[in-house]
Image (cartoon, rainbow, N blue to C red; front, side, top):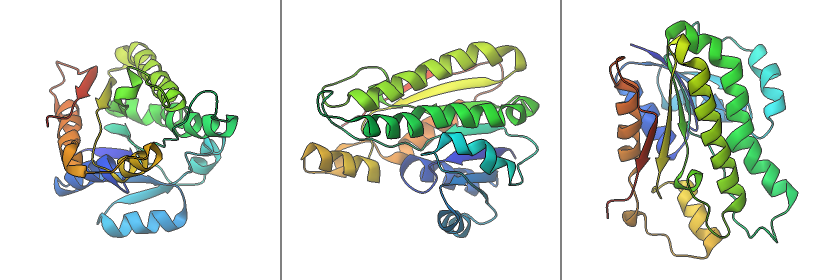
Length: 229
């Protein structure tokens, strides 16, 4: 049984991963943006422990985690939470850029910095759930794609830095997945949302857990998961 810290466990891919790990009897630590959300997560996943920290304010995460008990080790740190705001480069203001960079890039970097000693103890695994937008940038997706391209750079650098410490690092690039975030994205695009067209979050969870469960003689660095329909 391992110990895993997950962001984004409230819905979508994060919820699928958390549920699967809970069913396996793993030890879960779930990051919530506030005390109310933490209470909801604790009620949903029996035995899970919660930490409160808002990814919208990465500069406060050090203080927040310093006020709460932490696990002694982490077999995995899974960065699954994210936000998206679409808009043309000529229209999207600085605050929209800052919100996406904070939640999608700076907070994962800061959480990794703060929790890396616990991952090193376990010779554990850091998983960054990225996006197809982390590999290419389409019109209207510039700010989100920039945050996800940065997340790829973070993962690549971390992998090289921590290889000698026995820490594995995986980036997962899901295509469009049937999540509440995808529904909001379609709304921003002005498109009808049909979840049956897109990847089931359970399929992405399967890919993530395959990387985490891989025997120690191997490591999956980058994993793309594309819609099969």
